Length: 199
Image (cartoon, rainbow, N blue to C red; front, top):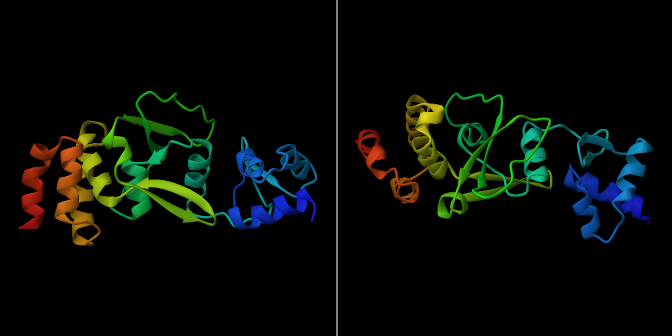
């Protein structure tokens, strides 16, 4: 089998391909361009390719962001939407990045970047695989705690809705909430609300 055939086979499993994925197998990234020019691959975004008939998933944009910004973790409104909590429909993709990371320049989609340090960034990351592509997203409990941490950015009403909805649908435990409240240093802020939902 030729390298081109191998790359097309990989695209069938991976859904979205980057030059790094091709290099990892010891193949030439230049082949992505040739296959694109031959109409066998489509360019979905800068540096990202998929098969022309690839099924577009509901999380296509999130897959692309996670592929193009390797340290990005879906957070806040985007994480709520991903987990099916609350009623938020963000028109930007909310991502967390480590504090000293350079801000990514993507033409599309629009990104809202929040900076986190230490455990506030590294704890609670879940990697979901959709059509062979990884999506990094914070767990439900971490996301709810983040909503309280960033309540001035997204609104206390959003944080409360997320807490009530996640608790009602049993997507988190009080122990998990307390763990992330401590990491985010929002225990005092969250305490009265936790007592209310648990009552």
